[in-house]
Image (cartoon, rainbow, N blue to C red; front, side, top):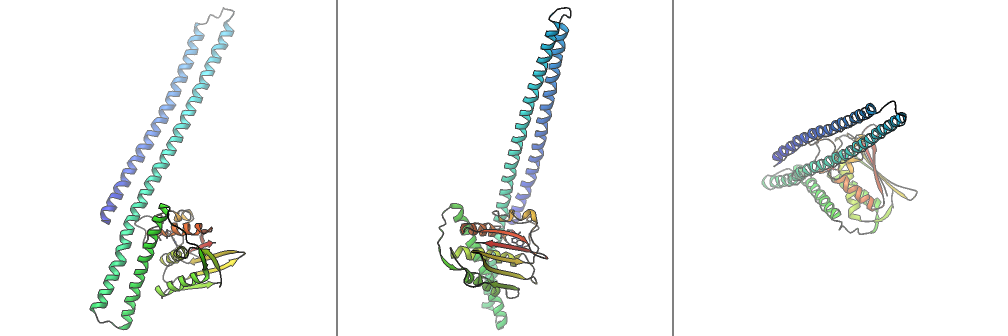
Length: 329
Ligand code: ADP
């Protein structure tokens, strides 16, 4: 299925390239035709004026007056052609830009949706396959305590991934349909962040996750959603940085504002991608360069969740490398 999807995608890209070439060719043709039309009309105008001048009788007393009239008429026509030509030109360029942008947006969306479908198939199948294999191994073989623990923790990791994915998918469809109801309750945000970080430490015992959270930071909001947002950010910090690289989680309250920072020392995000990563299905790089698994939904949902809690989220560069996701609530 993945292979046939790739074929369809490359076929679509080729078709789009042909459409682009045709589009630019037609646009160039229209502009050249418009310029040609203007030049011909202008020349005709000049010729008409010359004929009229030739027909004048120089010895007549009204000669100068009529000559002036012809010149004025010639100028008027030239101004008319220039303004009509400029209006047509502007309308054509404006229309071309609108059509071009709409087609490009449509194409990007359909490409991202296709990538998403491929990613989701993979994301759903892989954890199930790994968990099944691990359980079969536990059932069939007599393993040492350490080996058993290794397999169990690996299975738990995969189940966690599947759980996050399902939650993300469900929430995305509910948000799209506009029928997600925010449940508001008083939440100990310090506890929530600490629990998430501890959970990640358990799931990824070899990773260096540092937590520095102030106590007793409370807010009113939806516990499930906030947990999801924090988990998505932590999940990305793990996914997009190397095994040796440190991850830091800071939570503090400054002048009535809650600030959560999740820092990693991974590959970072190029400046021109920093806004785009919050778009639905958006993933940095093309399909072939993306090594990490994902669907492009995590940050889209995280941003929606933060905004629903009257907050905002930004991403900046970490020093010397990596990213800092900053959530203000
Ligand atoms: P996913 O991780 O499922 O692809 P997200 O919406 O969570 O989707 O992230 C969108 C994209 O942003 C990712 O594909 C990745 O390219 C980039 N990204 C997110 N977090 C980080 C990070 N901490 N470091 C580097 N790149 C990141």
